Length: 293
Image: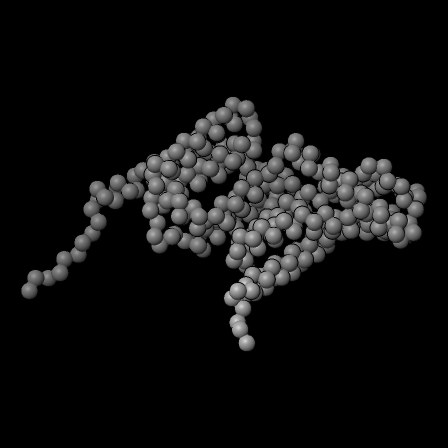
């Protein structure tokens, strides 16, 4: 009887699979190092982009947790097309110095590498980390200003209406709330855009982890918008109420920031409750599937 022989993969086969991926990784670092550094710098220094410090590590952990698809098939042609498109986008954005497109090309290149190495099935398996990485990219100032101004007006109107309902003399002029002896200016920081961005990211994360259906996930993300607008109006009301009845100093500095954090915690709790409710609705049997007596 002959002894069994151990079969090792041939060096040529290993080189055939690993060499293109290694070359692609090196080129990725060379081409997208600058966008990655600029993005990390914004995460660290810009309060409006600070949520990226949480979303990026969370995306990496979720990708590691999901692992590789058991039936993955590399798609080098499609992956190469995606990579070429990302490189072209990065080049054009670099010429125009447009940061949003520059950073989106980074996410597109990562998706291209995934498709090149493991196929579209793997990219679908990692849909949640990919979306979180895209949400971690801060919006340009032009878009922030465009979105923040309507939110400022909505928060001002809602807060002023609540103050008037409590018999507080109030006059509203755009996003300026005038109280006797004091004025409240609803700025971009108080518009709710920062909390809305964080809540949308939380809604995507909670929907991906807790919910099973596409409609449930979309509903949870959609509900984050009225929750953020409503609670920001409550914040404006509380600020005006404390300024008028207690102390004008409560409308600024540490106390004002503390109010924002407390409202944000309440928003998280409400979103968690909505996620639980949608999860219960997902678990209900359809009318045709209901058990008969």
